[in-house]
Image (cartoon, rainbow, N blue to C red; front, side, top):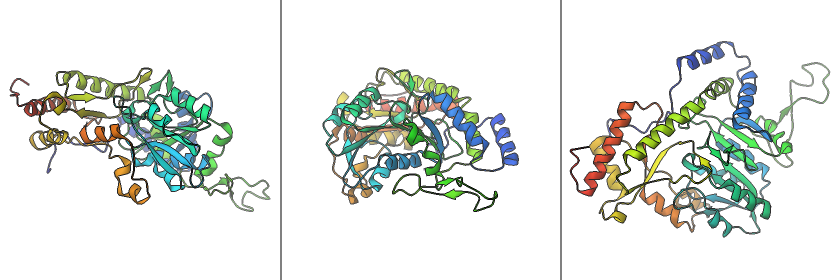
Length: 404
C-alpha cells in the first residue's frame, strides 16, 4: 500500500517533553555512557516496580539476551528437552535450540491463547529440563499450576513476560513468580528504552549474582592491585564453569529513559486497557470476531489487540484473509497476522524441529487478525478503525453498513 490511514506502527508510544529534556541532559552529562549510575537507578526502580522482594532484576540489551542467559543457567546438555509454546515469537525458543536442546512444542489453550498446562503435562519426559511460559499479548499463563509441575518434576520454569510488562498474576507482577522471568523494552512494547532493551529476573540469589559478569565479558576486579592501572583496569574471568560470558549490556541513555518511563508505565498500560475494552465493546454485536479470554487471577498488560475470525462458524462464507483484505484495501487499516507457528518456519524445520501436535495453535494462526494498537494513535484514528472494522464485518455478512 502506498499509504495507510491506520498503519501498523513500529513505535509503541511517544515521549513527553519532560522525558526528552531529561534525556538530553543525560546525553550532555553522563560519564560513563554505559554501566554507570543510570543502570543502577533503572535496576532499583525495576525491582521496586516489579515487587521483586526475593531474587534480583538486571537490565540487559534485550529480552532475547535474557533468554540466552537463562539457557546458560539451565545447564542444558545435548539431548535435553525444553517445552516451548508453538505460538510465540522465535526468541522464546531459539536460545535453547542454540544449546542443542530439543524443543518440544506445546499447544495453547483454545480460549486464552497461552500455553496449555494440560498439554504440557502430556509432553513432559525424563529429559525435560525447562518449561517456557509465554505471557502472550499481555495475558498470563497459569503460573501457579506450572510452578507446582516444576516442583514435582524438578523442572525449571521460565516466564517469558516480554509482552506482559506490568501484568499481574495472582496479585504479583508477571515475570517474578517462577525461577526466571524475562522482560522486553523493544520498540513495540508497552514501554521502550529507545527501541531495544530488556531485563532478567532470577529467583535464586546465587545465580542472580552471576548475571552482571555474564552480561559484561566476565569483567570483575583483580583480587590484588599494585596500582589502579596494574595489572590492568579490570580482570576478565569465567563466571560459569565451561561457559564463556557475553556482551549484553545496555547504555546509560536507555537506562535513563527506562527509569523515567517507569514513572508512568501504569498510565500507559491503563490507556491501552481502556482502548482495548472500548474496541471489544464496540464489536460485541459481531460474535464471529472472538477475543482472547482473560483467565481468573490475571490482570493483563493489554500489549496487543488480537482477535480470531470465525465467520464460517456463524454461517458466513468468509475467511480471516477476506477480513484483512477488506480492512487493507477498502479502509487502509493495516491489520496483520501473529505469530507464525514456530515449527512451520524453515529454520526450525532445518533443525529437525518441524513436527508438532498443536491443533489449537494451528487453528488460531489460520484464523487470527491483529489490529494496530500503538498508544499514540489519536482518538479520531481509533474511532475510524472501530467503524471500519464494523463496516468490513457487515460487508462479509452481506449486509449494508450505511448506519455504522
